[in-house]
Amino acid sequence: MTLCTKGMGISPDSHRRRMPWMVEKECVPGVVHSSKENMVLDGAQPVDVDCVNRASQVDPLEALPATVNKC
Image 1 (cartoon, rainbow, N blue to C red):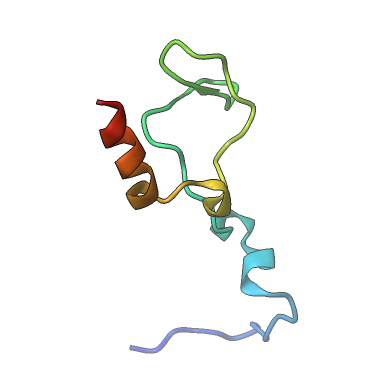
Image 2 (cartoon, rainbow, N blue to C red):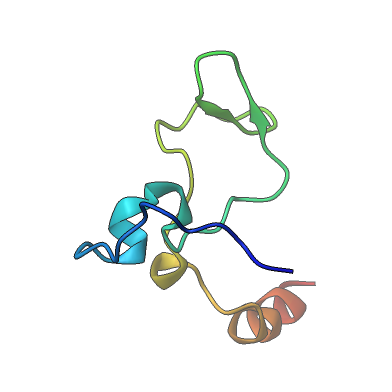
């Protein structure tokens, strides 16, 4: 099987710049997206972000002991 690449050249832009939807981000679980693209959490105020950066998220294994100690 061969793919036709006629007319396609190598782009000087990086892959992530040409495809902005491929940016490293992770959607927050348990959210409902409204028609205005705002996140709505259960009983919480709407948040004006689409997704949360992975760097700003807490590692679940680090948060686990604190959660267990609360119970």
